[in-house]
Length: 327
Image 1 (cartoon, rainbow, N blue to C red):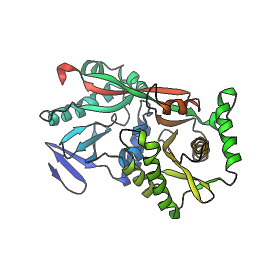
Image 2: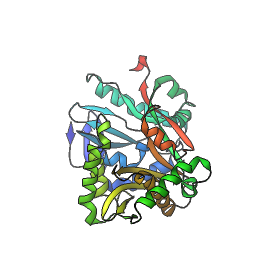
Image 3: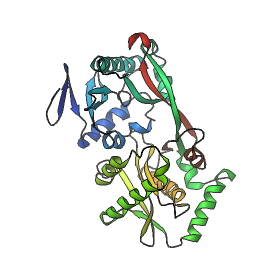
Image 4: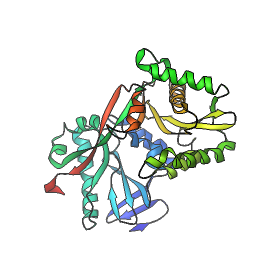
């Protein structure tokens, strides 16, 4: 492997490391894409800010599209985190995908790993399935959980009996913590936000096999403005009861990037969901949906919680592999 500060050479391909300053380029390719940019992990803040342990995010322009790669240094393996970005018909996107995946397959051949696109959703799958190239070379495996997309308008108005539990949670929180206020995070909040994250890891986070977002959170906190992210805190008498981070996707929809809360403030997470909807509307009044991220599957408490906010679009998550004869 050859490398300098900006480039990485693997075999006969040269890639560039994805840099924070390249968000504008990234977003331009994403906005020009002809398939739906609906997958949570296609958010630049996620792609750049959460490379994964021992990994680096690379990119290469292929036939007018931006192909992203995740290179794992320790295992010397190469995969695609998402589909290539940019304009193109199903056949064109599938052709670029085939070139990128074929290079990864050859690079990984002796590494005991299966080359993959980490995640697409069923809307993107429907687009790609119109291509004979995609149907011939690739297959998909359904992953656990769904990505949930809520209506901005409904979260702003909380209409009907369906939102009664949310309205009740908000009234209860206001009654128990009348001094609470939502404000933008400031530099002086840094230590308190880090402490909130540590406390969440030790309490709510303890139910997860692995807490994956420590590096991601630090990158969001340190680079919120250039990442296009708003950081809101729920301040209760000088204590940060919850914090939420959101942004706007290149196609003008909301992205609920991150949320953490203290369990001793019941209802704080519901308050932040509504405040994030208000912030999305402020940032982009035409935004119709907020991507709430994915839940943990049918039996998970996270799905039940997100159901309270009445998602209007649920998308299945899939992983793309070569068909057996091409692996």
